[in-house]
Length: 484
Image (cartoon, rainbow, N blue to C red):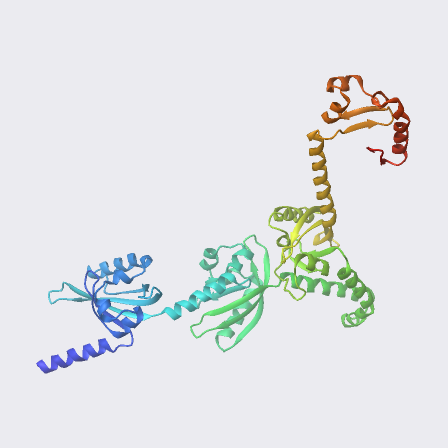
């Protein structure tokens, strides 16, 4: 009998010690009583080191309260065991994510004796989850995971930005509730077919925004063995509208000319020279030109715009908004211009933008609404004229005027304003009045003429100066400088 019990004990100790998962026996106050090599490897402590501390000492502070609560419920008999994903702080300070299963051993009388901890290292899995979360957060595309019940399990922020629904609203209802009624059958059939085979599939469906309107999304989806759908979608509403407009114009030509649509398409190259010329004018213009949607999304921009904005020729502009092209101090004004243009009014703005090299340029910009045949604003045309040199000249002129004002106010030199028609001085600074010995009250009361303060022998020269000023506008000579 003793041999049988000894055998069982040895068997238990072997299973405990050589288990591939971490195992430990923990006292009711949290002290490690016994641990195996796998657990030591997870937390980075030797057996001796680990048995000298408690599980509280190596549990991440943000996870400790929940762990203690569950352990207390276990000891009080409220739960038979518990599962918990938590973090241990390794000896080297790094974090180990684990899946903990906690159970309780009792004495013969049923009182709690010690806890049994089974620990699985899930650090690698959690790292993948974090990377997936980061991908979800940063992606401009619409990423989603749909569970087997048909609910959004997770959606990227792009969904809330485009549709206007919060993440809570999107995940609270079956995803099909957001699909246009006319597209629900096709969407459901596509996903059911996808669930029965490997690979991915593309399809389109319209999704309802919170304001009641719809956007057209192009999907690429794949189904996993757990019947979860991993999906990526892009908003192709504007591209689809463009295609529909092109087809509409072709159908209109078809009706007017009696030609088939294919014949019209074949005839279009006859106007290729016109299109080529227009494209050359667009690209060669010294003005920066952008074509926008009424929402401010940039559809096209010419070379001058790319240069001043610091945008490379091969750079993707599919997610570029006009407001973002301006310096952050200007964006509120730029947004107001878009609103004004969408209301059918030409908008003007003079502001600066900065290239990727930090170069600041100033532009006079007109934002012009473009209409369809129903007089609906369908596009905005932004035309910007580079006024950097003019702005620099204005800045220099303002600086020079400021310096002149300071010089006049300093009274170091005499400055006077003279009316050629009346022959009287109209303004003078204190420096000039000090030179001629008049008070300001006398000057303003009497109205001094040029001849009154000019010696007789200098009057012919003064008259000559006045005549030359009338004819030319400025004269410098004989120690006298006069300007009109």
